[in-house]
Amino acid sequence: MIGVIGEALIDLKVDHEDARHPVAHPGGSPMNVAVTLGRLGSEVVFLGRLSGDAFGKLLRTHLAESDVNLRWIVDAAEPTSLAIVSVAPSGSAEYAFHVEGTADWQWTDAELPHNPGLDAVHAGSLALAVDPGGPVVEQWLAGLGATISLDPNVRPALLGDREAYRERLERWLGFASIVKVSDEDLEWIWPGADPEAIAAEWIAKGRKLVVVTRGGEGSLVWAGGEAFAVPAAPVDMVDTVGAGDSFSGALLDWLDRNGRLKPTDLDRLTAAEARDAVAFASKVAAVTCSRAGANPPYRSEL
Image 1: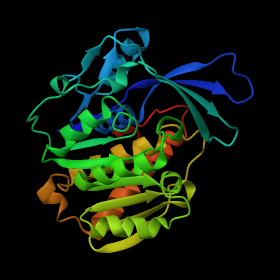
Image 2 (image 1 turned 90 degrees about the horizontal axis):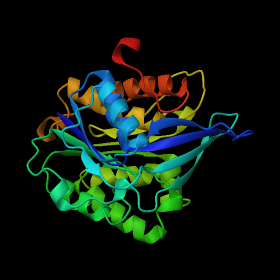
Image 3 (image 1 turned 135 degrees about the horizontal axis):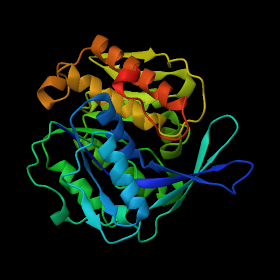
């Protein structure tokens, strides 16, 4: 089984020209990854802190209807986090967050399962980066012994000092075997740096699979001793909300279905297999971009 840990929040999507009628969509990068995995038919469990408010109930329903296991959900007393999503006519999205004192960031060690027996765990985004719970999640991940998949999914407005974030990221990279990162993320973390040089350094330090996504320009991939590009799948664009998350979920689904996700199996991943995995992930992300909000496809729709 694959675990996903992190935030589950509400995306309040507002029209770029007329914000009078926002629409609530279940969101949060890690939750979107879990939903993608569930809809593709992978066995997946979500580890999140969900409020008992109306939005929290919506999130529970969304996860359950997407075949995500909820056995390690924490019933949180705090309210649900909100992200205000403003979508431009091009489909690109801007985010503003309302997260002070909300449920996603309050992890304690007692709330996390010990020896959960998971094959892999996906993490990243805000729940790993925001105090007070971020360091708790980080310590838990470092001690698991499972394959760790990492997507930094940078949200600068909530990350504070750039140098402090870099130090945290370096620690996360120490236990992650799979890293998916966007070129925009890398540009914020290391302005002006060469993404290819960064990814090659990560591989040299022991990562097994690194993917740098570049939107419509496709992905750069490092795996199996090779570096190569995979084109983006064609898409009828509505918006980009959740596209990177569905990419991550589909990537893990492919690796799991093809016996390349557990630590010893990932060691045998070839460049050809990685190419197929990334092509599949690009296809799933393209379907998500053709719909409003983070709404990844079910396997039967592919």
